[in-house]
Length: 386
Ligand SMILES: O=c1[nH]cnc2c1ncn2[C@H]1C[C@H](O)[C@@H](CO)O1
Ligand SMILES: [Zn+2]
Image (cartoon, rainbow, N blue to C red; front, side, top):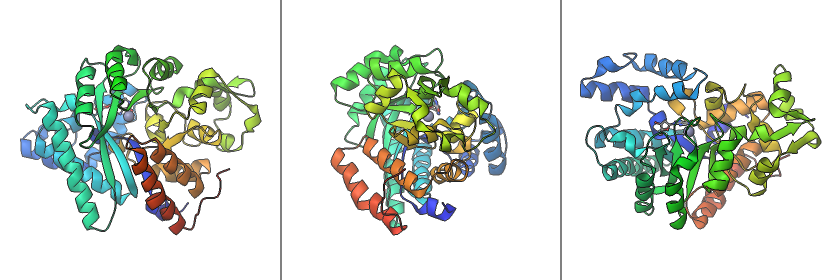
């Protein structure tokens, strides 16, 4: 794929953290307004941009998460939140995203006295402003919010109630995030049971910093509609009688290994089969996984095998600032290093749109009215993906 084609292609983003996608320039400006500029690890936008990426490259999820203290610091006022939300929408639209679910944890924005409701309303206002700016410029994007509860904290029941309260006002669902090992999703069972009683939607970060037990709990015990990452589902997949991890480690110097592997040699365990059979969406984030050591390289990232096996794969950014990425960059990396085509990008885009938390008729109208015509305009009308 040519980068310009990748950027122009309509894309759908289900897993993007609002507090992981700020413009470095905005952080510098907002910190200057508060008079706390000395708290920044670098004084200027370019220095900050590099600092976030380098610090997030630590190889560990808990250390990756430490960098968020500097984005959260400028997201404690209604004005700060509204600006960050508006710029998020503008940046995604410029990258060719036509529908996004942007997540953040309201409980992390209360330090300067905002209430949970004020946080949600400020972010919603920013999203609506961003959509209006994009529409005025002749573009098109819709952004909804997912409210995240932090898994190490104890506010999930309250955040779940907040998500239901705003379900008809810009909030599409609920999520659990934060360090995974040691914090199983079942700690938040009351929140999930409440959401299910309310017929509400939720996703759970699972199978990123921890393996199969976390995925199993998220699906079979908590009832998650989607999996945040879910990349470690490959621990339940074998190739030629070897575990995926062993198999890939032996081929770490063969970048085409996953593109060429004979699928008749692949066996799914019961959990992997369940995830595929039930069409459970995987919100996969390749660059983020390299930074937290959940995958070895783009070429050998499990997403390419899972796509070939027809799991319901979606492609996402996770944290654009910490990973120095965008959705089109993620797609371009897969094109350059793992043989992905425009047909593959269209397929994961439609997968994502089908898996979104907005009503079915609205998803369908974006698929038929925007995504399919958008790919047709690029010269790709939708032959089956190999
Ligand atoms: O990839 C992630 N795994 C777990 N937690 C994450 C990830 N990316 C961001 N977070 C956390 C840090 C943010 O402050 C929080 C809400 O967006 O979610
Ligand atoms: Zn995430």
